[in-house]
Image (cartoon, rainbow over all chains, first blue to last red; front, side, top):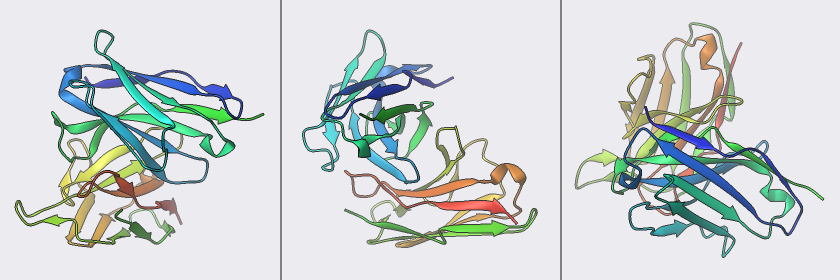
Length: 122
Length: 114
């Protein structure tokens, strides 16, 4: 079955960077885009960006100019999301999610990782 | 960006009664070439990741109980839980995937038991 397993919780100081991993299994890793979505405490869901694991192409939300980088390691079937220049407002649960359409397209997200809590605090 | 607005922000419904959540988009999500509405609904419970319930506005994801029904077209959509069960207590989000990036979500509707 499709599984996305994320790395554990992180505590970072303002100005630092965090890198969260998302290991995929149960399907062809290069066949489906992976998205990153976050939820801050008491807030809604916010899309951050996607990666095409086949081509390494990426697309990011303009709300994170130059701060978010999504990469992949096809040998490990793992996607990484790095967020830099952290501020307290970046405290949130970060999710990876699989696009439901194979090889891209505009589609909803059918499988999600368990979430990774990132706390930014001095 | 397409703005998604849900109503109400929260609602309390008795067990076995109907719950209705509305979602309005700032522009039409209907693609005329395939007559599909690019609108999904997710359920989010505390400590769990979001779960896809409905896509293409009215298609139920496999395994989702048939008491969950999506409807609507264009800019106005509804998620109906026909007979609320205790396990349905959650926050529900609509999402548009018509004009991306970005993929945008509504602000969420919290469903509780009265």
